[in-house]
Image (cartoon, rainbow, N blue to C red; front, side, top):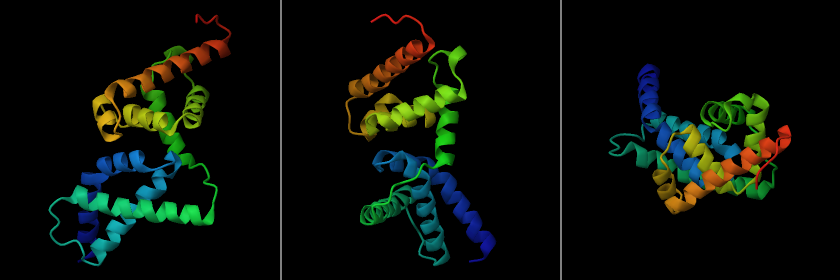
Length: 184
């Protein structure tokens, strides 16, 4: 297969499967800061398989990519566990989330700044990992609450509660920091 045809095929596969792969990785990874590394590893493996002509007639490309993603997740976390590495912050992923949060969260539009959004992201990372995942899926991937609940095997009401309670906590924290009186 020529390089041009190979790249064209890879780009088609990437465009077709990226959103579902991203969603799968976010739901199944234990640290949101690993998402970019995992996605890169997955698509490198897909590219290698295309080069080796392993990809002949795949009926369901999403399932094929998710299968690769499962294997990459296992390898990645097995390696992390064995080496006991401390995972460094992936600034590019954090910047992307900061942009998503900045565009989508309407806490109080007049008080949102880049620093506030960074504070929100840090706050979310310190909470239960489910909350950070739910916020990412809801605000960055524009998933419906019912879809998030289904994918994360939660009740829809629990998913709503995670979102709305956390938003309320964030609003209260910003009011306290700005010196406003908070009604409790």
